[in-house]
Length: 579
Image 1 (cartoon, one colour):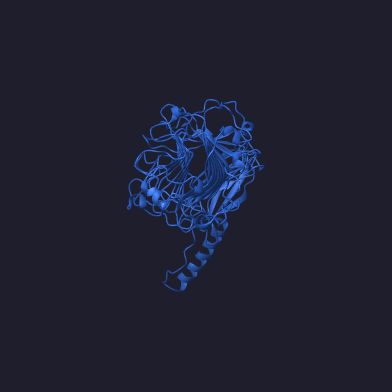
Image 2 (image 1 turned 90 degrees about the horizontal axis):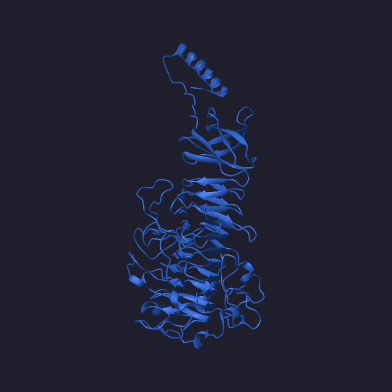
């Protein structure tokens, strides 16, 4: 046993007291010294070119830990760089401000009741070179930061657990490993992600393949699980998970999102984040999405997000009440925006653009033959105790949306190719939109349960209805409402709801719109703002009333104001900033 000087002094005192007691009494009642175990399993890994993570195991009864650092592979002087509060036994410390490509040594001591243990043996680590890469192969169980000067590769199904917060710096690139099938990032219930990029330095999740070789389905996607409500009972798995048994770190174990109790839950923030070439299907018809929000709560901040060329849905919301604004989806493998299972959030300023049906990587799954702009459902599947009428109902607010489809009837399957698919008892308020070039129809009110949310009338009353479609411009679409089937397809009167079946070309609605899209198409080819004289520059529902107004009043969590009416339709204001 090794003791510090303080412990030797304490032992000497105890020995003297014990000796004196022994001279005058047979009692053997001295006070035992405090012996503090040394932390074990100390390790260090580079987490960037200027950062390292030190992990170690503590013991029950410890109060805190002292972390020392010395420069160089040998020699140098150890000095304290931080402390760690005791919180369980698996602990870590993130050290930052280091020199790229330099070697450091670390050691850790425990503190208990004012007494410090000996230091552990030292461990060494060399930081990454600037522009270097780092692999992430295990679940993240403690706070961690990803740095912009390092490219990170997800190798496996990586879960942020244990209430940890993952922080990602602006400009950071995170790759899903092409060779580790389905590599994904999961933010689990109780954990958080703070990924706040900027317009100039967005955070990008992409494929590990070289630019020009990347394909839809190269990797899995970004999944966030919150503590919000859904309308399905029992143990409900997030789609794409559960292909292995157990919970081994980095594997695709079962992830549940049911049973939440708080629609105001907070899972962190995403801002200026792009997810591209995602959507791998770990099993048949069990795909991952670019962005998946499972029961995510309203305190979560979502703004300026883009999905590009994902093999399944771009943005999927399963229940919860997360708000979002300024969301862009280019070239979805299935639906651009999908909401179901009691989702009740507010979304404003949405762009969906589809020019083709995607071609996927081999073995990743199959894209839909008929992608759609919006596909919203009530309750569907196991655990729907009242079938499509299970509560909470799916009643989102979707305002200022531009949904542009392929315009090619050959891409339309037997049921899809629709700008807005509303079915299975969904509600919602859809206002101030542009729906263009969808080969089958602008809107499908698919069933009587959905029509009932609107009061089963052609002009829903916003004071009482849970479903309304107001002030939407339809262009290059064969019919506003899908016909046929058993439901009241031509559900809403055009004039009474401000629905306009326009004429002319889709391109005339926008300042810049490419005739064709290829790998060389630049951002300057797109400008969704309507020019003077565009049909999209007017015709909006400027004032919200009734239930729509009541749901829209509270500010968005992102800080970008409240959802409200506009005099224009579509996702961009005339003369506004090109966001």
